[in-house]
Image (tube, helix red, strand yellow):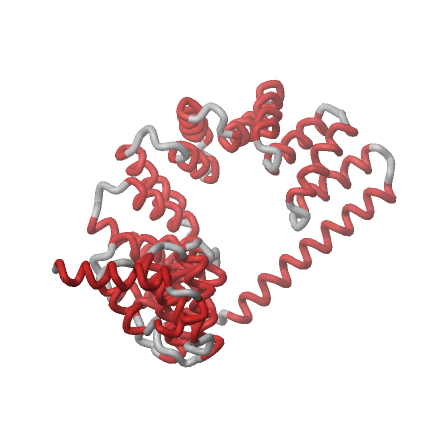
Length: 377
């Protein structure tokens, strides 16, 4: 062991003292020996010297990239890998290493092409499959993530984190049946996970199973009674089910944990508005817009209340904010049209009602096209 350390030390000194003009004295075997001994910094310098003496040595650039990756110098590593690929596109393993280095930098979009190229030549490479699925997940392309994560998860049934990422991808891709299957497996592995019950509830809600979703969120809250957003989610589900008393209790419970939850304030304001309690609703809704400027429900409800109070200019202002936040929804346009009618501006009202018809027609066309693509057998 002592002689090996002495040899490595002598080699390092030689590398540092050799002028660039004599860099050809550094051999790939020298760099490989340093790397094998775990002397990564010295190995990187040696591989750099090898690439300088032979700028067309693709394998040397690939080896340099690998050493730099081991040093967690991923930006430098990706540059070395890309140079290796430019010199020799079919060099084995380099595209996978490039994808991994990009992934570890959080460059999910950049990781996708080299990982796809890896699978094109090696379709059964499970590491590339897993990384590609995770890259699509990180890049928020959830449908593509499901495609690869499903394969990866099937090959590693005990990897809870991988299965949870697959389940979340299914959920975010609105593939609710897939999500429920995965969350059911996760519940069997860990029945006391509040997060799994929460996600299961979200998937059930996506399938329109509101009552079952409520049960899952109730279970999640029993397991984690102080977890932010759980009470809000339960309150929202009660609101959907028109169980307003239960919704108010859950939303107030959320505000006891997170006093600045704008969504909870907005839905409390909406419930008060539906009960005709305008004096109670308006302060809640206005507070929600102050805390969260893109709270469309709050602006829409403010507009509704102000119309009832015949404060037409203020109502128009609120409803126009709702339109800005989502121009595809016809409801705000309809209410703006009604205000113009009440103000006697029939031309402006006609424009708004025409917009309502246009948006509703687009909704019908979109639904028809979806049904045409997914015919019932």
